[in-house]
Image (tube, rainbow, N blue to C red):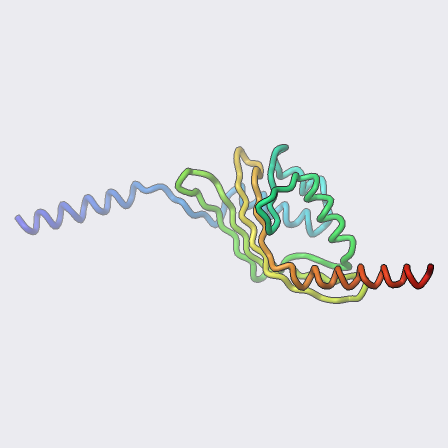
Length: 170
């Protein structure tokens, strides 16, 4: 009787484990959308980059306050115009899709962003994490996390230098 109980319990456990839906993915259409968006960012194809977002998408950049896609796009254009080169280290990136407990689709991306400022050839490497929420194949929410201390300091130095040069000219 004891063996029967153990065998029955093992069978039930195996069946129960097999019925759980897959929650983590290394390949999906959403992952391909994120990769295409990153490529569009790296090549400055802003219309392609923008096409991945829903009209009402909210983007959070190290903040609880959201930006519109239009506002984020303007910020990216401004930042990248100050750089002679920029992009992600694709050799050491990690990307996965998760269906959370509410069955929401999220793609998580970790990589190092590398860039060189055009004005002074200063190279920067910044770890970045993206958490991207999809609905119906479009990005509806994106959270971008990075330590911008080095980048902000370099942009501030460049701004201070420009202001100093303007004062000397006048």
